[in-house]
Image: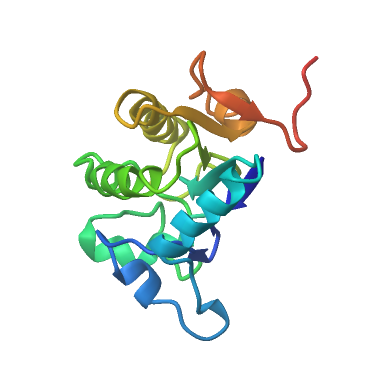
Length: 179
């Protein structure tokens, strides 16, 4: 399995035709991204060699790469320059944008697993634990029910926010153990 970490704290690394400003905003050291054609070629190349490609698009934490979508409705927990955690706003504008964007991204990858990170979130600014739980749970359910994929996230999706469902794949990394 190739775990393709396609977004992270500072950037969105895959072309979006729905939201082209995501990659148009990449300049300097952050320039460069995979086009949708690149992803299709990568997935095909891997498949012919028996390798699955499972993407990870980090939300709601590590989401600075989504700053170019603030004009589209994405909301962050804070308005500081280093903002990076998405806010589950009462009007659901963040969820609306995420669902459109993730639907597009899910369509680029053949694998039935789709990772949304869900790690290293905190109570900060407008964000509270309940709001983060609701955003994560809604996206986990959307991945399964609307995109037909198995949701995956880091251990916090289960141990911190408790947003994992019975079908969510939970990846351990360091803070929790099974005991």
